[in-house]
Amino acid sequence: MTTKLYYKDPYITTFTAGKCEQFTDEENRSYVVLDQTAFYPTGGGQPYDTGTLNGVEVHDVEEVEGEVRHYVDGTLDEEQVKGEINWTRRFDHMQQHAGQHILSAAFEDQLGFCTVSFHLGQEICTIDLDVAQLSEEDAAVAEAFANDVIQQNLPIETKWVNEEELAQYSLRKQLAVSENIRLVMIPNVDYSGCGGTHPSSTGQVRAIAILKIEKQKKQTRVHFVCGQRVTNELRTKQAVVQGLTNVLSVPESKLVDAAERVLLQSKEYEKTIDELNEKLLSFEAKELLQSAEMIHDQKVVQMISSQYGMKDLQKLAKMILKEESEVVVFFVGESDQKLQIVCGRGEEIDQDMNLTLKKVLPFINGKGGGKKDFAQGGGDTIRSAEEVLIELVKATFQ
Image (cartoon, rainbow, N blue to C red):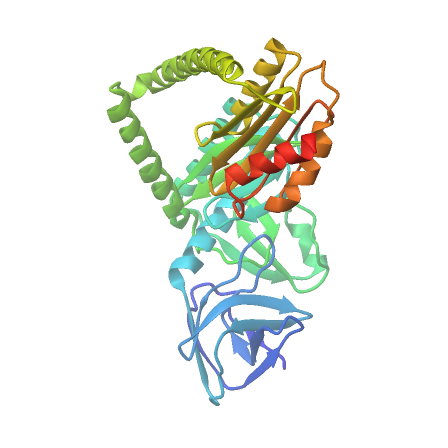
């Protein structure tokens, strides 16, 4: 079915279609094809429109081999279909897309940096510039130029032309098509081939704000927002800043210094905690070694703990083995409904701890491994920690 397209005029948000055909694609998704539509399909860096067809929600729109597919979750069997576009989403996309034209023109006009790609995201937009580095100062120059274009409230015009007529215009980028050419024009600012939706004047873009500059191999990615998104970003960031000023009890101008002080103090506290933890583990190691028992004429240290995680269990075991070369260590930790095993032996003992562990792990559906002198693993709590300790002793000495 040939579809008459109304989305080239972005201000048409309702329409009536006389023919409707419904199909299922190769992914078993239901879609509708109409004889006319105002829905914009994904393309040119711009996402699709949403809305309804006879009250049924349209959640995706694609153009496949010239066919505009409206993806829906319901069935449309009426002879006449009334379509309605989500205007809030449509106008947001119009602002972002027109803003991208203006910002790309600003980078090229003021700095000679060409745009090689554009992405209109749900919250943030990006353009990739064909330049390896971009300074904050240069970005500010382009941003100021772009906002000046917006303030001038210049017309944004569209025109269908053929290849012969292109010579009349100074195009910002090479065209991807050679027929059905649609130019989007901002007089004396930007002339680009584009099939997207745009407002009728630059003033409707309202504002452009560059949020971040990011290096991308030999290119630079510029993150930005336009229109209502600028207000949204300001409101969100102001809430964060106000929250931080309240928490840190400093004015906005001193937030960075205050945050750096907090981070430095945090690192110092972490260092102190680590040092104290080392001392506690050292005391624990000595106490455990004193409580070692003899099993099959071999000194053995056993412990079940819900206090220590795997890293501390390993560290504690190694402290004991460093202190005593003729001891075997069996630790079983209980945490997050998991059992963790650490087993080791001193350098004077000829026991294979990795083999011991491999014999016991099947009892708890576990995984793990290590070397002959030290091994670790974990599994499910389908056996008690006491039973696991018994199995470790059996696997080692029997």
